[in-house]
Image 1 (cartoon, rainbow, N blue to C red):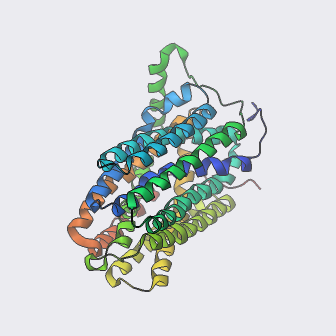
Image 2: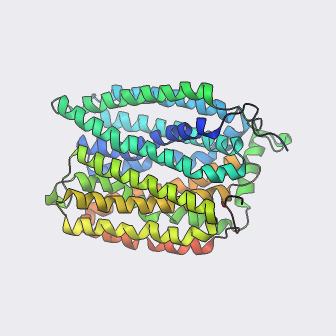
Image 3: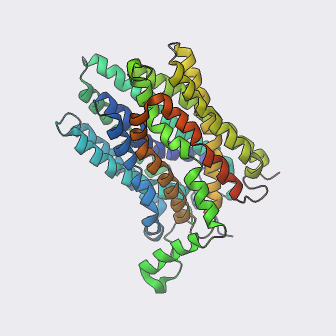
Length: 428
C-alpha cells in the first residue's frame, strides 16, 4: 500500500488551521457581508438576493474541480489561493469608501468566492489524501469545529470589532469596515505563509489522470460520468439539495431580523450585540453541537445517529417563531433562543458532512467531493435568493412560520439514502 505521507506531520499541525482558513472567506461572503451591507443601508431583499448569488462559485465549482485534480498538487493550490484571497480582501478595503462601493465590493466578493471555492476543492482533497480513512472520520469533528471557529471569528469577533470601530470613528461605517478588511487581509497572509511551510507533502498528492488517451476534456467528462453513475444517485442528490432547505432561508434573515427596529418586526439589537448573540454565543453553541455530533458518530456510526440528528437540527428552528411573535426585550432570552437553534444546526450538520465523504469515495474523491459540495451550495443558494423577497412580502412573523414548514422536506430525504453499517465509526 502506498504511504500517505512522505513528510510526516501530525494532523493537529495543519487540519485546524487549514479549515479555519477555509471557513473565513466563506463566512465573510455569506454572513459578514450581510451585516456590513445592512449597516451600510442596503435593503433586505437586495442583500438576500446578491449575497445568495455569492454561493454560485460553490455551486459550479464541480465544473473546474477535475482541473484541480489534473494539474499541480492540492498543496500548491491551497497555498497559492490563500495569497490570492489575502489580496482580494485588501481590494475590498480600498473599495468600501467609494461611492459605487456596492457594485465594486459585491464583484470582489464574487471573485473572492470563486477563489475560496477553488481553495475548498484543494483543501478537501488534501484532507482526504493526507489522512487515512479512520483519521478522516476521527477528524471530521475537528475540521468542522475549526470551520465553526472561523464563523466565531468572522460573524462574532470580527463584527464586534467593526462595531467598536464604528463608535471610535464617530460613526464612519465605511472606514470602520475598510479597516476590518485590511485586518482580514493581514490575517490571511499569515495563513498562507504558515501553510507554505507547515502542510505535509503526501505521496498521493499528485495530478490525477484516469486515461491519458482521452486528453483533458476526456478526463473531465469521465470524472462527472463516474459520479452521476453511482448507485442511488437520485437519493444522493435529493439529500444534498433538501437536507438544509429551511436553514438556507433562515441564515440569510437572522442578522437583519436581529438588527431591524422593533417597529418593523425586528429585535433592534446593536452591531456589537449581534456579534455577541449570533456571532459569539451562537457559534459556540454551533461548535459544541458539531463536536458532540462528530464524537457520537465516531462511537456508533452515521447510520445510528442520522435520525436523531435530523430532529435535533430542525425542531429548534421554531425558536425564531417565538422570537418574532413575542419580540422579547430580555437579552438573555434572545441569546438562549439563538444558542439553542445554533446547537441543533451544528449537531445535525455533522451528519451531512460525513455523508458527503461517503458519497465521494473512490479514485476521484477530490473532484467528487467538490461535486457534492457544489450541489450543497446550490441547495443553499436558490432558497436563500428568494428568502429576502418572501420576508419582505409577509413580514418576520409569517416568514419564520414558513421556515418551520420548510423543514418538511428535510424529514423526508434522510429516509431515501443508504448508509453502510458502521460508516464513520472508529475501529474498536
